[in-house]
Length: 138
Length: 138
Image (tube, rainbow over all chains, first blue to last red):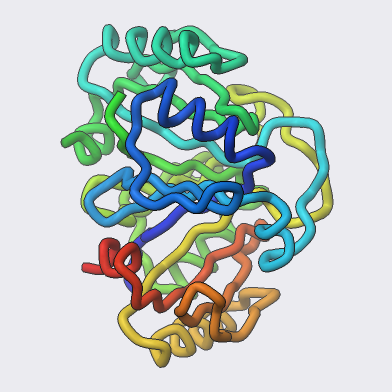
């Protein structure tokens, strides 16, 4: 099995709210959209982020945990400078992200902050000057 | 903000079990590893999958929900034929994945099945003959 991720699919409660946030707020253009069912964005050369209505997700994948904490994953969007981290966090705040955790220096040598999408999924906006950070930059 | 995903980070309970599954079982080579802390794999040209020890994840990101259902995301590994779906699911089963949901035809025109990693994160192994499926293939 090649180490290769093709899609990441997130269970979303309200795709209208997801669309408002990602398309209207962050300015992303959907790659595929079926209103009320699925909303997809191309987020890499061969990578798709899919937001899938929670009821259909549960019917296929299984009943979701209903804990009230944060989801057990983060999605990172890496940028080239610490200033860009702050700029993207400001954009997310303007788009209605809540909470937004301001950028701070991290023990691993970089600078990052977080914002939550309408379902609470955390995006980390990160400047990572290390080797693994350079690997992911365009 | 460019639509771009750089890292996906999953909260992992036991990185030794994660390593056994992904490296020994699936045959993936770590891109970066700090035993007991983090285990990273390159899963795309500019994409890293990071397994991060749950306590450190919670200290930075927040307390996790403790629901007992499935996590609210799936990761998909797309392949070129239905036969490859079955082959990868068999490999995952041999690597100890539990549960494994056998491949089946899907309403969207493809064929896919699922397996769970040691933390219950679901990987969908998918053959998708549609346009969006061709987009993600190497």
